[in-house]
Length: 410
Ligand SMILES: NC(=O)c1ccc[n+]([C@@H]2O[C@H](COP(=O)([O-])OP(=O)(O)OC[C@H]3O[C@@H](n4cnc5c(N)ncnc54)[C@H](O)[C@@H]3O)[C@@H](O)[C@H]2O)c1
Image (tube, rainbow, N blue to C red; front, side, top):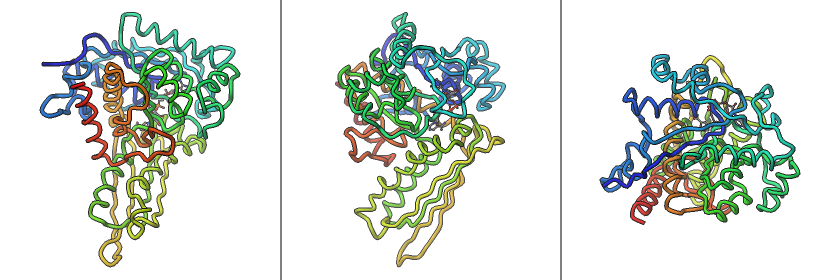
């Protein structure tokens, strides 16, 4: 018998860009029978023969809500982003035109490429902005909807945690005094937790992964997780590296480069924003290969990551990997990967899964960091600061299924 919840689940996205509109369009197309939600584990997975769809909100019961710093409908954004075909867009044009973003909390210092943004909330300080977001959130659940928030906004500039992030009291003082180290995404995360709404961060910037917000999520019993959706190249890395390690083949170098032409690519073209992404992408190999335990095989790896903004490609990213490996008696070999992927097509099902599973966790009373969702992230949020995180996709999948199994029976 199905344990799927009754009632509506509204997915709230700060950021109504390529990923969010691909998610929204995909759900509407799927429920009309015009396309299939491929890539979604909550749609196609099963646990001991029981479909995961029996545990999560049906596609028919999902609604949307968004904030953005440009006042464009979901249709206009989707048409401009060029991810979906005109045929798909035409079939759901009226639904997409009806979805319009509320004004965002923003400061161009965090995303210099969006300096002309003009759909922005006004207020004397960041706490006032958070209050406005909480009001928005309440209006999104006026008809009793359950809510989940997934950050699909641009990657913000690189930031190291400071004193203001250290605990909740300092953070709230910082909101009132407009502390310059508080990023807009952190204001959304704060507002979500205050309103009891689970929050996930799809971008690599520091957002809910600060002690102040972890403390707050535990206090309020709200599920949180980050960060940086694991799609294209890093997905490949976390599939390939465990395989090479399993055969005890050595790795001397891993050079990864990408070309990307959408707005995300434009934002990442700025060094401050690229730095945030680079740190997130570089962390993966060390943790997977454990060079400290395998010095002969992985003790001296050169790992480089590049992203180039190349407008002609739009959302159709191309990622090349050159992997210098070595085998028996140190003889060198090479692997070349050329992944012609579609960024938002890979990211959209992750947002759907995260929303459904965070909602499941919330219904089961699980607050704080949801480690079982590491499967979806490039830089999984550690349970305690500095703790090792699992990057192996297959181990992450086992952990995910274990947690869902427990929630199903608990
Ligand atoms: N697509 C992928 O494969 C993938 C993988 C990992 C991470 N991401 C991250 O997901 C995010 C979304 O990607 P995308 O391709 O949709 O980018 P996008 O540029 O198309 O959309 C981001 C949207 O966020 C808006 N925005 C920026 N700051 C905001 C704020 N403070 N409040 C509200 N809106 C704001 C922008 O105006 C834009 O419309 C990016 O940060 C990207 O790095 C994407």
